[in-house]
Length: 214
Image 1: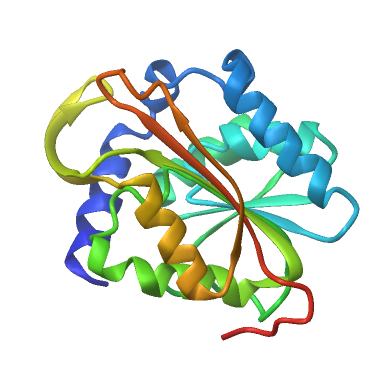
Image 2 (image 1 turned 180 degrees about the vertical axis):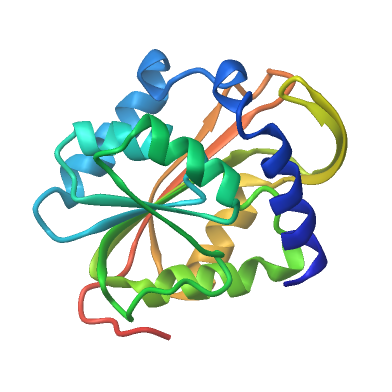
């Protein structure tokens, strides 16, 4: 396991029990709820969906409530333990965005909601290639991330301190370039709250019909 995966996994093992107290449910955010509902409408009935970097399962649960056959995958066993406890009717498993234990072309849709923000930018092409691999032709990818161009190092948060976590803010246009380079078509790009302290980026992309894994 590479260093950034080790530190990310360790940090979320520390904050797992307190995480949901600091992060509001998806259902409370009108704009993100609309984006994820649109994603659900696009993939519903087309096959299985994965919430990649699912954490405590809040997005997984929202997608399930929207009628999707969804499972969550996360790097942290402690976050997954909370997810299984709070959502015992849903499926969760451990995994990394760099090497998903999923078949080629097996997913109708994938969500990576703030799951790429701890990956060093130089490794993001590998992540995008893996996302392209696991999606079926015509499948959709929904990304959420901090928008900008900076590297932030945190040693506290979610009611804890003393950890070490890198967070990368990514330009919206760069994320679009990454998914296009991996073979996707960009369907929608959204810059939320551009004047806010932490602007938010959203990209919806589609694997072209007839495309196999790269």
